[in-house]
Image (cartoon, rainbow, N blue to C red; front, top):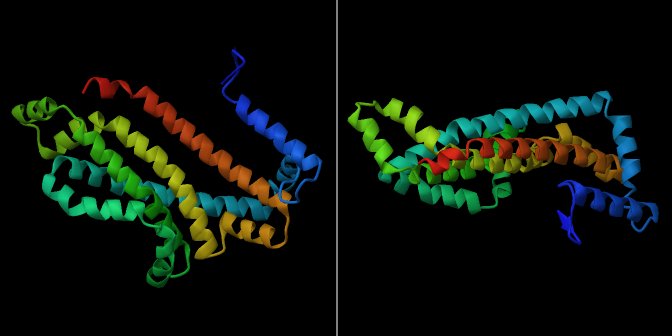
Length: 250
């Protein structure tokens, strides 16, 4: 970030917005935005409570299983779509359809099929994340230099060897990009699932605090959720930069 020719640290913009938030809260311009200092004080107050820890565990459980399922299924499917024209023609319209569709509208269907428990929340989380992972994995495979594939075949590589030693590693930058965006979409999916399917986890806290106009508590939980999503996204972006040399060597 550069202001008047002075280079500032990357986090400076967040500090500026935080100061603006604190100022608006202190002058009590709206009850919806309490002072940021009061929000962090509330976070310290509720952070050790049993209700908050239980909500964090429930949300982390549904998020981790749903996202891991999306990666385990999405990456192989995307690679298969990238290497097989037939599979690509069969699946690509459906992948594009679900990626562009409002998935929240499917939540009532998932409730009918899988009930009102954690299973439906996990599936909702996976549905939000999987489609972009599939598309990015497909795009990564389609960018591979065909000479790599021909070399693998000429040396007698089995389909499994070609899958694990050629396609996956050569498409890794795009795969990690899809996983990073999938993680961000999964955060949305798990919260929507917890709000609409079963009021548990952070969804129950959002419902409780919003219905009682406890805005400091509401923002404290939301900041924790944003911070977790930001840390995960930045870590995956770091991994992308670490493997970026694969793209230039394809």
